[in-house]
Image (cartoon, rainbow, N blue to C red; front, side, top):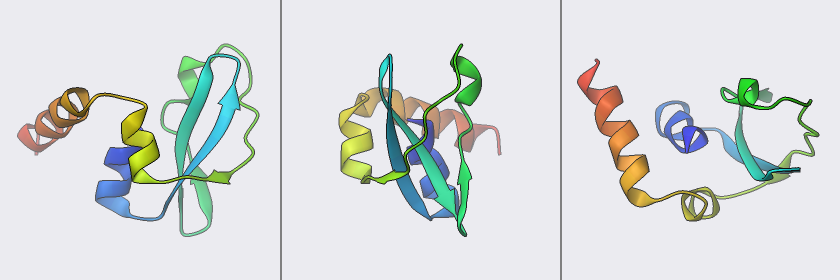
Length: 77
């Protein structure tokens, strides 16, 4: 879900990789990979930089959780 919000604000690409816990989404902006949630993993993330889409990232969360995060970010501006 964080990768969606990063994409909203900064554009770029949404990437994905497989972790022991499942699919993980992160971003590439101006050629640099950004993963703002890497600290949630106990083991190093095996990044394979597979291209993904907003639709795939949104399918991995709920529209309600995404909307809540966006509204909280907008309220803090």
